[in-house]
Image (cartoon, rainbow, N blue to C red; front, top):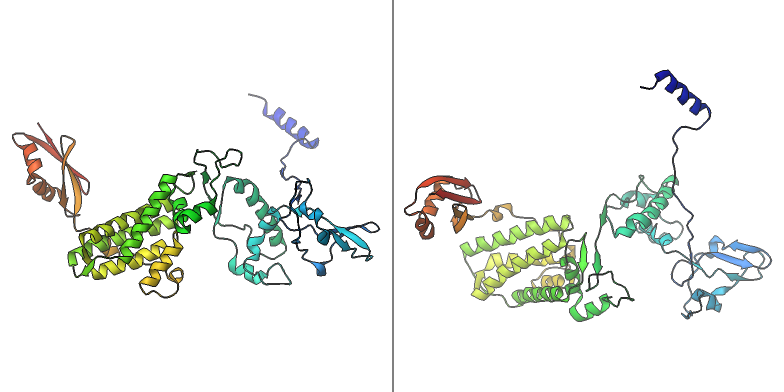
Length: 422
């Protein structure tokens, strides 16, 4: 083992020479914000032959983009071709001057626009500190992977500057980040004009409707994973919303049916509980899948010709409320048809009736030597003796047990009953 005193002496010598110690390395780089394009905030600089480059005076801000631009392949910013925009006067000497024709990187605006949202009509300040304290920080930031390494970094930088100026509360602009997936082309690759696999949203909305396209994107897969655009799947979503419309506009005969009411309300409130949980967790695909199952159950009742009136009306009402986030237009139409006040999007989220979700019976798998031979209906709290009594009275299980010796029975409440025989 090296001599301890020698090690101390070496450490002291290194410290005296200034060779040791820790440091903080900021990996910030210069940000070139100028862009040769029309969109973006104009850079507020004018050039005078006598006075040089000058900032536009504050009382002349904001510099607004002109409308007489020509988008031609010159290699220059389109603003350079706008005489209306380029020609101005020097704010210092009053002689003819030229405006800067580059615009700022759009990240310059998007890095702080969320701070402006709480106070968008203040003409004298970016926003008031009082409004910022009420609304900021942002509860949820949603973006792709590139946002986490670019925009998120820029916006945090802007926010911390505003914090140091005493304009915003806290140290961070966002309390939660959620990384969304990417919608790929039908070929499974990233959409690109050069690949010819771009699916234009406007075309899809025109063909299918905004609600279908919106719900399809949510139904595509886990929101954080994304996936390829699939025309077959969007057809399925379209058919689902057509079924929804049909059960609303052409309901079954409405009667009084206590047993039917319990069954429908169980399906309804089980769906509501799952949709509520899934929307909170950004699991939009499973929320829609659950609503599809409820629609199928209501379609079954419609095909059978009758349903309990109270339970059916409740189901239509809650279905409209559940549809409002993914399918806002059809939800509004349904809400108006059932006499709801304006608007479905101003209604509180419905509460789950937990008592309605309790099942009278559950399906229990019955196995013989590990192979499922039948399924039986038992009470949710049925003990082994009760489950065995029902199973042994079932013809298919009785046949499997006939002439055999029971070694033991394995009972997993709520799941299965397994007879081990020889």
